[in-house]
Every structure is written in structure tokens, then in C-alpha cells.
Image (cartoon, rainbow, N blue to C red; front, side, top):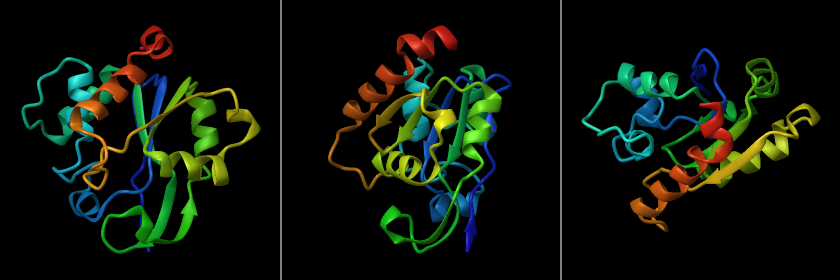
Length: 169
């Protein structure tokens, strides 16, 4: 059984980015989106107009802090082989999310892929989180080859630069 990472959150986050569960490479590195083939960090840097020059993990987290973002996963622990969500077995859902959302005043959730959204709605969402604005974004995983990098970047930029997030960030 593997356990997810704790959340990374700015002092006053307004947008929570939710993934499914850290990959094997991410768990080995102890970093969210640690697989260099995953375009999560590159996309975030580009969304905010910062050149992606192989930043270290501290710089990546600072990007989240600078833009009032939080990052966490919908699965707290599970059995998994490899990195694919389809290989997740015996999931324990992150039931701490509703309290985190409320206590931090989160205004929007950006889901990194449809699976994170589906799990959140099926197993985690509560009436207290019903009014949160949601963005279902294309997964930044290398397994999501249906959409080009440019398409992923455009979708993420539109969500993270929306009126709600811009006024809040």
C-alpha cells in the first residue's frame, strides 16, 4: 500500500489542483509530478509566463505559492503497479479534501484529468463543496496522447487565467 503526499498549499490558496495519485517515479523522487515526461510543471510555468528551465522542486513549489495555488490528490493511499490510474487497486479516498477546501477558502478546483474529477464526485464531494467552481482539464500525463501539448497548454491557461482565478490570484 502506497500513501499520497501531503498537500502543497500557498498561505491563501484560491485554486486547488487535484490529481489522482503520484506515479512510481514521483513516489521515488518524493515530488508531485516527478516524471519528466509528465508536462504538469512545464505547463504551469508557461501558463504564468515563466520560462521552464529545469527548475528544482523548491522552485516548482514556489510557483504554486506565488499564484495562490494548492496541489493534492483524490486518492490518499492505494496499491498500484506502474503509473496508470487503471492499475490502482484498493483505493482509500482522500476524505480530508472537503475540510481542506472549506478551511482554505478554495474558490475553484482544477482537475488534472477526468479520473480525478470522477473520483472526487463519486467518493469525496460533499454538499459543502457543491458551489466550488470546477475545471476538468486534460491530463498532463504522457499516457494522455490524444491531445497535443499545445492543446493541453491552452486548456490549462484558459482555466487558470479565468475571471475567477485571476481575481483571486
